[in-house]
Length: 285
Ligand SMILES: Nc1ncnc2c1ncn2[C@@H]1O[C@H](COP(=O)(O)OP(=O)(O)O)[C@@H](O)[C@H]1O
Ligand SMILES: [Mg+2]
Image 1 (cartoon, protein in one colour):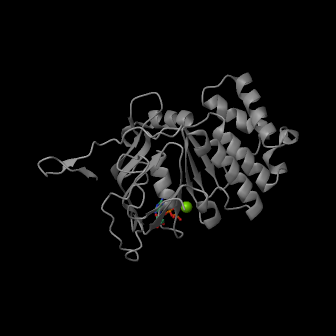
Image 2: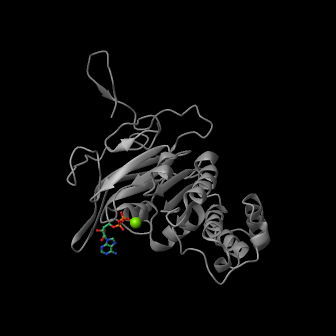
């Protein structure tokens, strides 16, 4: 935490929230996780992880298989409840929400309306067509049927997939299906999108295209993206990267037992931009 020199020489604490950012997207903290812990019998999935995500930013979560990346993403997104620690979400036009204390129904609603999800595969419904898969997500998010289908067609058009609108998922290539999955995640314009290895099954060219779409519709549109990836090319396109190892943010000082003091933030103490370089965090090059 920054301190400001005082006349008497006594440092006084800086205000908890940084002043507004001059950038067009603003940088109100969007999501702030503090000291997340999740334990399974025989496994410490998360051992005290704190990160913040700011509006207009893309954060890449990297790390070896089994290190806790998916667990962290699921805690951030309210898909699972941590054993300890908090996740605070600051929606655009409303009061802050403590994700970790919501009941199941409230969390489900938050996920449908404010969060978007992209996984490596499996979220699309094979019995539905491409346009139906996208439109259904819009309807679940509260859009009227006609509006949702129109928006879904707009998405397919912008992705060059309008000719495939009536095809079922199994008739699409992996890259086409993953572009549909991105459109599905974005039709409600979620404030924050969580993606777990979204390009893990794609070749590098298709992977680049899918990331471009994802970045443009999230961080590029003043919203946020949290993307788990093994792919350094994907991670390099995010604004920040953190490395998870054995359930901790790896600050590079010790293998496996790096103890992070809960200040490894992306974007500062309250998830606000401009305080890069904390433990385990790399700013954009
Ligand atoms: N449902 C579960 N039950 C027991 N252990 C789990 C469960 N989910 C994850 N784990 C354990 O938590 C650790 C982190 O898993 P995960 O977050 O999926 O890793 P990553 O996504 O980095 O590959 C692993 O040791 C894994 O075995
Ligand atoms: Mg995983």
